[in-house]
View 1: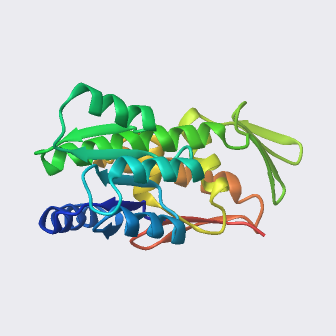
View 2: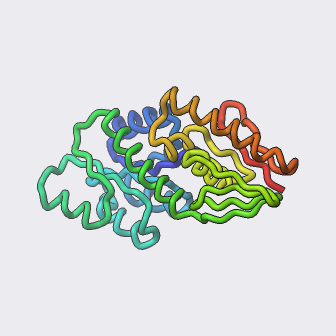
View 3: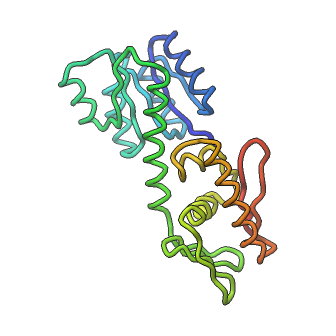
Length: 228
């Protein structure tokens, strides 16, 4: 469940640096040297975010983004450019850019902007997901934050409810730890990680009422909610 990024940059040195940096930050990155190859990669794979240089051979970033928007109206797009003219910036946002970074920029700046966009997108996904779940012997109302088992119910805290909802939306697959932290807490910190461990422990105790439902640790990756 690593966040998958499509990076299109015709400057081989900059592209390699950006890719290696994002890989080191636990992102899965495909680097394409021009817009044509970038568009084909988009058709062949599923991505969570796009980063496009504006000035590229064969197909520039604006054209690439326009074609992608016809197929996917919601995927976040960040433009990288040396252009600073107001009309160029406005053109980028008109096409549907989520952000616009002017070269030169620091790696940290790009990372902060990527994380900010993904926090917003992940939060929207969590909020727009289903609110009623039936699993094992449980019924969970995420909006009311109520977990019911047979004739008994318990009210969860907001974070417990968000954590359970995210697990249910990714049941029987690995929920990557950092993804959960970014989605629910907005950032990865030691304190937030310890808090998440506490909530997982609480949820495990609540779900033990049904032996067919279990949250297991996946070493070095995250958690998996096992459902029948």
